[in-house]
Length: 210
Image (cartoon, rainbow, N blue to C red; front, side, top):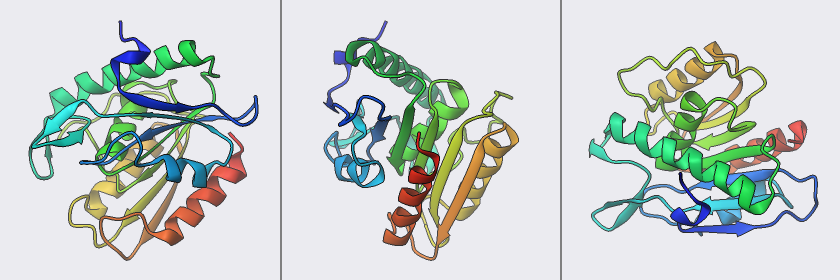
């Protein structure tokens, strides 16, 4: 059973007892500190839980292995996503978090991992704000899980050469078909967190008051 200290991580308590928890999943080559500013921008006052991915790809931290650029090792993704889900459950116990108010946010590799958490571990997360995410289970149709009551914001670039807009739209469709309430926000740029998308995501987060 995964313990909370099985992942190097940062935890910042919430500023108010009824605040949600943001699970922050960094992109390739970053670490547990990278998305803390994003978390504070999305949900001021929320608790921040930011682990570090365990995969080392030529000195870069990742959440799961890939066979080459754009081609995931799906079996490794499934295994490591399950381990991450256990870490989240352990953190809920260790830090006294509300398990019904955890929202994942990630960029690129972290966003793909967040999408895998939604599709593979329904009920773990209340929602997600994912940037530059695509359908993570490449070549596989996700199980017909029930994501009703789960709210998802997807920020995607129509000119993204790494996570193509077709992959982003496929993820939106997969989540929506399983009952998630999806807001997809596209921008004309590439593989980046566009400031206009971040502003939309912040407004989305505030509207739902997780």
